[in-house]
Length: 290
Length: 337
Image (cartoon, rainbow over all chains, first blue to last red; front, top):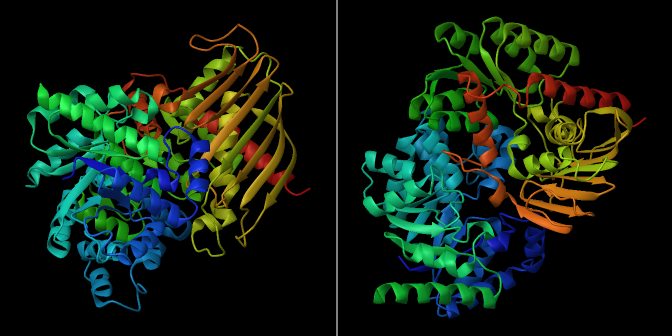
């Protein structure tokens, strides 16, 4: 995995501490072109991997990337499925069946044998596979070496004890997309225990890891212990703890933790992207000299 | 271990079920839903026992407590049945569609000494809790006005086929979205006692309102405006906010950011004269299992602790939720007059 991953929250008005900032971001990134330009800035500065959700607008970004294969030949996307808000809003509006109808490729009842057969035979894993395929369509021809399950789904399945579905996701992205499976979670230690129990070894897990202890369910100590003693490829996100910690201190903290292979960050301007990347590089070089 | 069952595994029910499933002091003993696809999936992949008929479930298993997240029109009858059986109840909001039924349930829960809680999760959000402290501490002086708002993108085009689009079943923006804001105003400012005017407007829905605009007043003459719409595409998800003004200052708060203006040097600890900004990240305690916001885990945990007798049954009680139902009723009676 690349050490530095560039995320997409800022493009889609996801801000954990201010609705006003969210709105300012939606205005700033109104045009898809602006998003791609900002991704290009991040690439120039050394973040070759873009980690993003299957948001509707990513479809357009991918389309632009496909049109310039030479420019993006070293570029890769870590895809995160699904963009859950569209489903959550759809469930409120249409109900669970209505949502399945709306989002399965083609028309739920009319088309696809696989889907139709799946409902009759109660083969829900096939339905999940169809939904993965539907979401992955937008990334066609783009290098997606890791496909992640978003935290709302990972954690939902974790709480519901639906281990088989976590395993099914893992196995399917390997088989169908020749990609590694990753899991985003807000409950890293608990998830790791469950993944180990279903035979997924050394899993890729992306979770909040920060000096403020923000969204580290079960507590910071448990996270640090898990990173020290267990086997996983951890990606740290929300490293600034929602903005609560000064950037330098925040980055040094995560860079010095064992087993944190990658750091995921989001930023909107060249200056902020550049600052974060240099802070990671400084902290890493300091650590390697020790 | 507290034995808990869930009735209704829709959006909220599944969320409660997952949080309960991860709770170390809870054993989920059953889940009931009328949808075959839902019980099939849960039956096949989760460790929970499933039922299509909740009555059968209650006869088969003996839960200490039940989470009711069935459509609103069923709340009253299900809750009554549970209380009669001596079972502690957590019920989703809004509490009841009929205030007389609601009042009877309040009385019954009290008489039987059963733990009762309603799912108004905003009270478990750090920023709103902080607002409560500042207002109760009198730092703004005698409150004179408030503005309660909520916007989100639930119905943003013409189309419908769920119970949420049926007024008699508890659908519509008033019961779904505005209830949260009303409940928050009742808690943070004072219970609303008069509705001076109410406009319920439909933009996309045929049979229910998509927006609620009201002029309100509390018993102690605090005036306020309610502005709520679930047809707001400019919001990524539901956003609830409240502004409270007094002679000595003003608070503007949503679920993530709290802004406080203080006119004098009489400030709460950690605040100064002038503008102060705090973030939910500094105000919200961590939870043991996170699914979709700390508040959802915290309210479940609070209920479990109340059943265990570790905390008082004082948050989001049936009684407080009935006050909210009363206001909803007043708005319905006043609408578009």
